[in-house]
Amino acid sequence: MNTNINTDVISAKKFQRLLLIWFAQHGRKNLPWQQNKTPYHVWLSEIMLQQTQVATVVPYFQRFIQIFPTLTSLAQASEDEVLHLWAGLGYYRRAHHLHCAAKKIVHDFENKFPDNLIDLQKLPGVGLSTAAAILSLAFNIPATILDGNVKRVLTRLHGITLPLNQKNSENLLWEIAKFYTPKKNAAQYSQAMMDLGATVCTRHQPQCLQCPLQNVCVAKKNNLVHVLPIKKQTQTLQLKHRTFLLLQHIDNILLYKRSAQGIWQGLWSLPELTGKPNLIAIKKFMQKKFGVKTCKMKLLSSFKHSFTHFHLQLHPVLITSEKIIGNLMEDDAQIWYNVHQPKHIGLPKPIKTILERLP
Ligand code: SF4
Image (cartoon, rainbow, N blue to C red):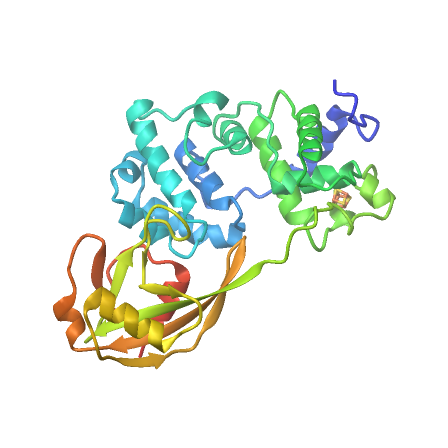
């Protein structure tokens, strides 16, 4: 037993009992991935739920399993099909990982979903907590989870005042989470922990009077509920400006496929220049890239989109020129996208917004 843990807060047995009684009455049991539960559905939902709320995930999950009902169908899909279904859910690296992991299971694990922590963590996009969630929820095998919701519950329950995003608090929380993890009822317990964090011990308006742990919770006793968890001070996010060019030919707009690096990896986007619209820079770009000396330009409404690490102000500029079509080299990395008969391709949400705003 790790001596850092204050085991006086509540015994593991009592904690498990209170939590499971609460879960029987109030836990979520009708989520789409809980019906006809399979490892494939559980894994898919866990990846989608990383950084994303349940309400947002539900329609994406339903569409996804309709198009890709099996792991094999996902493994056989093209990258574009997967990214198209993911478009709008954000954090696109998850979609790439999902697709790669499906192929890995089919090829390296003979189409059998891994059922142990070591093999699960060999799948792209699956860390220790996600592997534990899949193992416990899909296979009912005991494993300790520690996602954001669980961290918040345990931090408040134990009144931990260390900033959350530090190695020592992370280690301490893993120890506490392991201390409470039961040897039985693995699936119910993991779901209960997630549900308590997501529906009762919420970030902004925790419902302590509905909480099964209210009589032992250190944060509640010490009036620290709204103070915890403490996060290490992070820098204010930088605002970056970028100009997006809509090269128009009749109803078509030129799109190109982004590389596997940076934001919107592998998605289709618009040619872009750094900074706010600069007409001289745009003219130079048009001449260098497409050999176009004259073109009409129209500034469209700009708007902001936020990423975890920066804010992006998007400045769309509509460009029309008779010469564009003649000078454009068609290849796999660029397409003419018909805005009135859109293709099923992976578009980042802000780019989709720009295209949808076109008259
Ligand atoms: Fe969270 Fe309040 Fe429950 Fe403590 S009593 S675990 S703060 S909901």
